[in-house]
Image 1 (cartoon, rainbow, N blue to C red):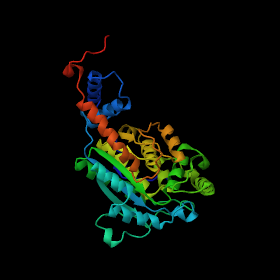
Image 2 (cartoon, rainbow, N blue to C red; image 1 turned 120 degrees about the vertical axis):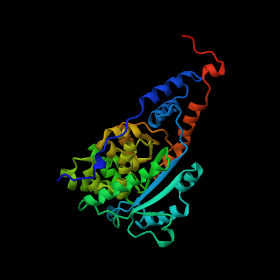
Image 3 (cartoon, rainbow, N blue to C red; image 1 turned 90 degrees about the vertical axis):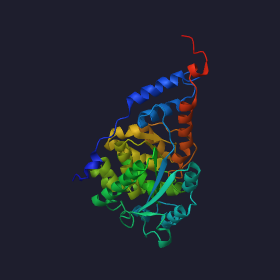
Image 4 (cartoon, rainbow, N blue to C red; image 1 turned 180 degrees about the vertical axis):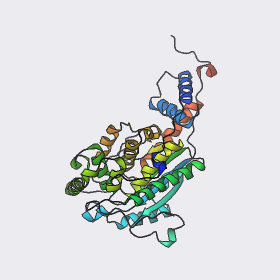
Length: 356
């Protein structure tokens, strides 16, 4: 049965500004360097110009929103860490000790942590530092049925949307969605397999540190779940409802909304990339607004990038999640903008141009 969603889920994406893009291309052609000498830095600046509608874009205001949720499939022994770690990491985020907290401070970015569904609620001492949007005590075990009810999926999508609208209204120029949830690489791998019609043993990876036997078990659990749900895996959002997590759904909602609101988004690694794949399969124009930040060390990420297709900006062997890889890419985006705006043109510098 086809599920019904709020009208906003189906709203069209904004269109990049082709006039700003052409003006940025013309400016690049006049800067004091050989054409193309700055490689992808030129491409980044021109693309950001089209997304911001400005000849000289800037990335000063960055919003990092971290979506958190637990996964019922953890009961199948698919993670190297116990489920309690999800809430323990929420406490770490609230206290500023996690990697993404350090990166946000270094970037002077705004950071919000949203609890969509840990097994236990956030403890009272950190509730002021964590936004409570708890839908349930984790998703259901998708080995036995759908991970989410339709209303739960809609609530998670809505949470992602609300985060982006709030960021846009505050003047954010770049949105980063992060995630945390023990078991979420299993969910993301199952989703990638469903969307790309690929066997789990090709995409399953170690996640938080599984050994080879653990990875094989993880792949077997995913294959069993795919067999159960396969008759219903015909629509990206239905795949998400059956195999996803609250945090992955919130990421998907945030990417759909970034495209609708005309807000560029830096997509993190494997889990965020799968959420972007879902959003783009639902509305292909979402791809215009996505900057894929880095190549995750998770084996499934390369396949997802090839399917989109997309070329990540960085390859640092990272696989932490939390939005950390996207945050690490922010200085690169800022430098691309600075070069584009700050370099002199041939005329300004009195430098002769290339002979025709």
